[in-house]
Length: 526
Image 1: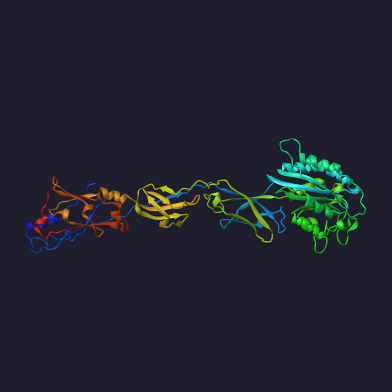
Image 2 (image 1 turned 180 degrees about the vertical axis):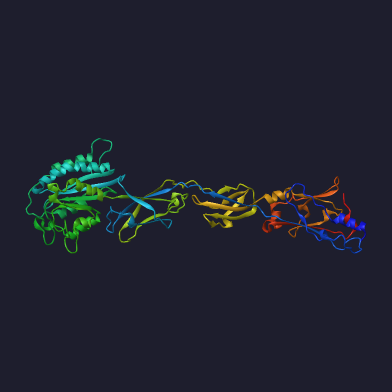
């Protein structure tokens, strides 16, 4: 090859590439760049094969780590108000936290507190005092008159809508409770208390034929003939200083009017009476009536008090009345936190299925009275979006961790460098993000270089990472003033970079093929 041909060969195909505005530089690793000028070439005026110029540059993407902390969630405390009854239907007033199993939407609640509602707002109780009016009870009647007023005021203080009524007996029932007089809250006096004290004042004691009175018949009449109010607790307080007659073994002066013990228990149970007895120490009062039957108060969920101790003052009548109050329906309040129990605090109350039950299924039943929440509609929504500090490619999110656990790519998306979770991470969650910035795309959009070539580069073939580039993707034009070809990558998009595997391979290899098999192809076309 002559010196002139060699000169033309290098001027056409040995391209001088100059970078105009980028920090990215390319190296010429083509076979042509390694031609030994001292070595003689074959005497052909043009190469018989296309000439390849390969410019390759490793482009490590700039990875960035960012961390965020989810907001502290507002606590959503749930309050459950409930009542408990035993297998006999009596209210239980000594439920303990360790007795209970609690769950919400079938998830166990282990961290909760339990208190008793001392207000019992809106509750009703009807108390019938079943009073022995034989001569020996004269002192007791006076004592009841003195103490019952304070008892009613205690019920009022506890917000119970309470009434008192009187039933008296000897060998037969003397007086039944014919009507319930309710207090009028619009007046300063208590109409029910006035009515009860008036009935008590009219009660007269008289002697009875024998020691045993007809207490059981008095309890039955009180249960069946009292006009109990709807939805009111029913309480009977038996006050007597004598044992009772009963059929068939001990009818006494009551004769055919003496009921059986079993009959009495049956009526008390059917009428759902809570029974308290102030009586002497005797079978059926302080101890079991028989091997088959417990004492009356034990069967009917009340308490027993020794009559003589009440008269002596060692067991004050106030204590007896206080016991009645304690044994009335108790409202329990159970509270738990959504946060501490790992629940969704944003869940509205209507979607919280809360259950309370006894660990021992034989202990009784629990009725949920009310359910409330600090945030009935759920706490304000936790953050789902985080703005990244640098632009990020659509495929540039490498790894995302929440509390050290890798998050699936299906659980988040990216919108204008804003990371969006499908479901907000939990309160105070640690969020760690590793991603590739868009520095590469920005750099390529600014990157350009010049070719001094007599080849028609508009019709040449270009490759990136061995993937051919559509001609429309490159900005190629000839600058007649400087007599050079100008090539830049400003038209490349993020999708192009992904198609050309720039992100996955983390490198940029550019290859140019010019067809030099015909002389006219080497002419610059204006």
